[in-house]
Structure formats: C-alpha cells, structure tokens
Length: 81
Image (cartoon, helix red, strand yellow):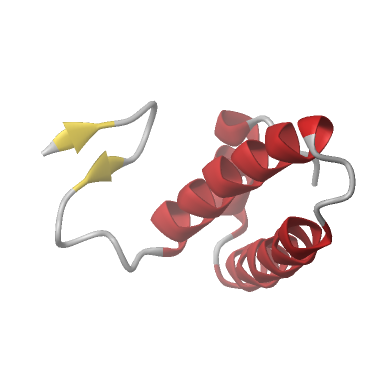
C-alpha cells in the first residue's frame, strides 16, 4: 500500500471520488507542464480539456453529496472551488 499526501492507494479505494479527483489532478499538472514546453501539441491540449471536465463533474457530484468532504479535498489538493 502506497501513501500519498492524503489518499492511501489500495484496491479498495481506487474507485472513490477522492482518489479519482486526486489522480486527475496529478494528470492535469503533468499535462500542464508538458504544454508549457510544447505549445503546439493540440492533442495533449484536448486531453487536458477532457480531463479537466471529468474532474469538474466529479467535484460537482461530490459537492452535492457531501459538502464537508468536498471542502477538505479542495483544500488538500490546493485547487480552486
């Protein structure tokens, strides 16, 4: 079992909303740094937009279901509301 900053990785919680948002956030940060170097990589830009939209939908779902968990996740990942 690997421990991240706040989400422990195991087979039980990989489907949780928090873990999915965490992995999407890591992917978004990686793609953003890639696009800073490769400004004309439109395929990666499209992938970034799709990943942003997926994370947005998951965060919207979490904010409707459990506002406290949503606020904690936003604070821990240091992303805007």
